[in-house]
Image 1 (cartoon, rainbow, N blue to C red):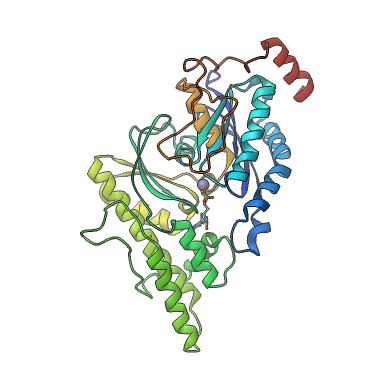
Image 2: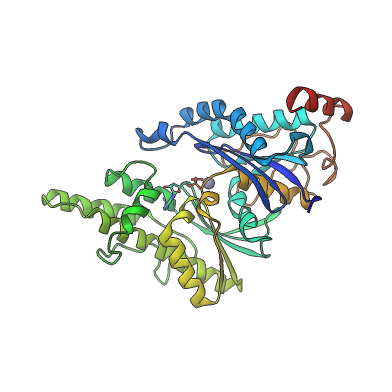
Length: 378
Ligand code: KG4
Ligand code: ZN
């Protein structure tokens, strides 16, 4: 539909510079530049290195997305950007770029939540989200069960990790196994050739008196590290494939069990899984089996849309425009700890939708068009 909002989204919360363009629920471009290789030798993301890489990649990645989408920036209905949560310096690069483009083009700016974006991206794969949506969000920084009656305005946390995030556990176990960074994809690969029942690793917080929707992966990580250490001390070879498969089985068992329980308790018949760990092949297959058994429809985007990207930000931005949510102010801050309950950062200026066909304050409409047309993307 031609009247669906055309939105560009910018993501810089961690180590991926992502720029996506969507029209409503249709993906038009998904350009990514990653600094992951620059962090590998440190075994984790170095914030200053990530910020510098975003700065260098930002303009080329925007240009790449625009040419991939074959649209003119002048036709955009809005510019969306991850306002948080994430690394402060990294977020700042994206927020500054989004402001500059939105202001110069005379388009409304939407500062959106990274976590809500991880959920909303599924609209690009499976169409409109059911309301409410139950979402299991598992990434390097977060593991949460979220109930979202309205992804643009009402996201409720049911539970989250009390220590490590699921992706963090993958990364740390990979480090102990000397598999490099990030750990998730490589453990996923080794696990395919291993026996998931080889070692009985603990399932955290699954006792009858434990919080039903909270997660804990720190005990599991320690158990795996101790098991490996014992093998090494005994001079035995560490069975990397079996350790990977058994560890992965423990993580995905707990994640899927709790997510399905939440769906049943809340009477929700859909489960959405998002975030980088949703790219995990065993999590996907186990969730598929268990959801089918429970009569729950599973929605998991393709792996490239699960890890950080700009399309997810554009998808949530487009939903903000479609629902006439208030754009953000021009002094939108980067908020490294933006709460998950705030899908976007609405501005104080004017009623919802006022800026939708509007322009940057202080600019005349014509002037902005001239600027965008001749100087930026003629
Ligand atoms: O969502 P994401 O790209 O960035 C954050 O917002 O954190 O998630 C990155 C995390 C990393 O911890 C990475 O190891 C994990 O997602 N990950 C995976 C897989 N692919 C990425 N974990 C398990 N299996 C995978 N295939
Ligand atoms: Zn993420």
